[in-house]
Image (cartoon, rainbow, N blue to C red; front, side, top):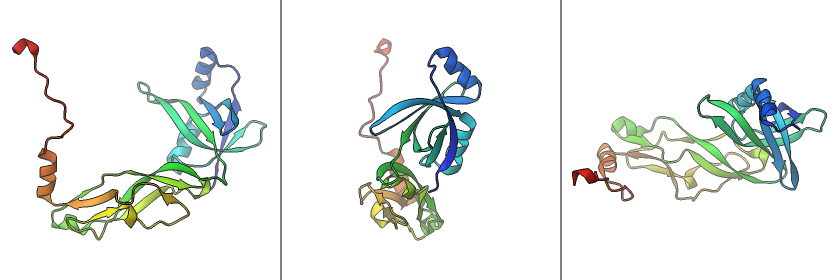
Length: 207
């Protein structure tokens, strides 16, 4: 995984007016921190950050260029979205050690048409992300599982996934990632009441 360059500016003024000015200029306030590293306030171009995450994935390695400082490799650790304006309002970057393994979530994608669906079965995907441990450069963009050979009643577990790369999947080996259910089985699952379902509230005025 090649690091993607992203320019940043130091942020010294933390007043509301300064933060508002940063956002109005198309940038987003952010913080960069890491193990045994002092946190630093910065600002990055909002559009460029969103484009980087969209094109390279949430686990992309970003080479952050903070004005005249030496570039530092980071990953987007967290971010905040304004629910009303649907705009990025803050981001957290974590400094990574390219020689040290780390744990991250990686998207799981199913490909192919399960043969069981041609017989009326329904393909189910109970898991959409996997926990992975790897060095930053070895983190896969996604993990793809071929479901073409799945018939009705068949399933694929974590232990069945062929790992292509230098990473380890941390999820339990028996965890199901894909299965093909018979139509009648699916109906039973949908109609069965949940054991954790809350009791229906009764209007006190009607009693």
